[in-house]
Image 1 (cartoon, each protein chain N blue to C red):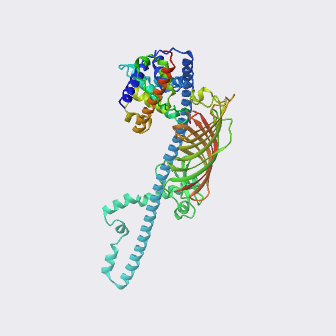
Image 2 (cartoon, helix red, strand yellow):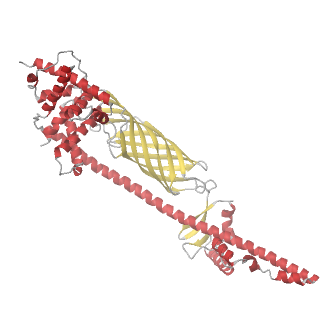
Length: 420
Length: 157
């Protein structure tokens, strides 16, 4: 035991001492290998820069479009709210005026009756009840009521009614000029479908004017009651290739789940998990295992079947809206987790010893290394359900897998979404 | 200037010269990419050595499932005690012996004996238990002892 311990110490000393006694001659081919690595690194860096710029530009454009849509929608919603308030105020005022008339009629009738029966006390009492007394019972309450309900004065209402009548004659279908001096009163004809809920409408801005536009029954209350979240399941064929978006091998498939949040009516952000069965064939220059692997005997062709968990983050913009359908574009970035990698290697001249098959399950992660773009069409199947067809392309920002492959994928997602 | 120094380390971690060149070149690439992080007030060699050893550990993790190696039969032979004989062994022979070890034994041996890491540190670096690290070191030394004896006995006296 003591001998073994002593010998172990001696062994350690020997290797420690010898490790420092190196005299390794320089080899030109080692430098050449490094030079090739540097050149490839430069090329990849430039390529990644271009793709990153393209992705950033796409995301920026979609974000800007979304922002403008969102701000316009907010503005229009605000105006709609004001119109609604004005309508309510006008309705309240009309109700009050009708009540005034009833009271006035009562007063007149009672006054006559009183005159007939000669009750002077009652006549005096009723005579002091004037319309203004009903509305303006307390100056403090009146100011509150006017502020809350936006009640314009009687002359103002009449003036606005006259203006609106003239305006609607000059501009049939138009409600109010925007952004003009304020919100005018809306005629009953214009507002009745909206208010009664018989036919849902929405306000849209056109050539500086706000007009009412009919909405289909299903989509009339689209953005009013929902959380903004949608969940979807998707499936797609997958055609993948190494090195360039061509020369596709056998098709694989993708399926997954996704959650989407509407930032505005036309812009949404989504994320999810997509399981991908990816099949591709790589030629010798496209498949890059470590140089020393297999004693440097590189295959001329590699067939790969990889199981990948794709985790995308995507911005979606609806660029063309119809009554119950829309066209959209997406841009996003994906992270890949390699679940399983199966490779079969073909050699120019098989030496009988080289590795022919390889299975890797190291769960390597490739963070934000793939950009995805798509253009799709979505149709509403029901108030809450929609169906999408979405052709896509995925472009590598980096290499994936044990073979360090630049993986391109195309396909077309078919997805069903449920609005929550 | 750093080629020989780097290769002397990489050769001990790779199982061939080609793998050692791959490790060294990857380490050089990391040096080029991270040269801004280097503090020029400190000596370069330790920084470079750290990068190189980390690169070798990354290679170990990346390729541990595809290495093809055969463990040596544990020969029950007498212990080599003649230091004077062993001192005649060259650096190349030492490197060759280390390269013949399995990747797991080789890496633990290098990290513990040459770099001076403790077993708990090695366990964290290689994602193994400290017990496995100790066991691998023990087996590495056993294998090296067998190889040393073989080398010595084959040497003309």
